[in-house]
Length: 182
Image (tube, rainbow, N blue to C red; front, side, top):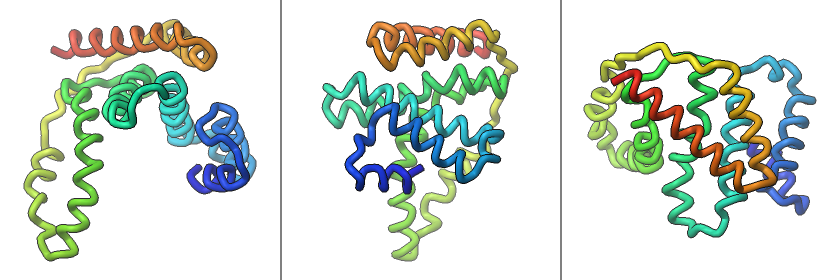
């Protein structure tokens, strides 16, 4: 997707738009039609869709606030899809927002540490994180709620009211999930 996005940007297309995302998905599917059946492809497209949705409706926020809020937004928007498809939730699940933000710092720091011969300095923290007990619970979301969520997502392209309803739905699903696990 990055290569197609760069080519479109080079040709003067507005990158952060739903039309660009749709065009990119169609181009990728035309070259690799088997991706139509790939769950990873559709989750990736969904993630980019929700990032674009955020950036379109909250472009007035400063870059710092966007950097802080995008991981929360994407988590809340992808949570219903994740629960509907994978049907599991852990109390550590919401911490993925923090881990994602920290990984943005961890990865370059890890590369620098490896370059200067101190690559194992962060290993114990990484091993600790990977060995946490998950205590997962099965969580299911009815297809009615999923259809409502997807409808709000698409309506959110045009009206900000639906963005707030979408956010409320995502927060409600998160609270419901935490309540059922705790």
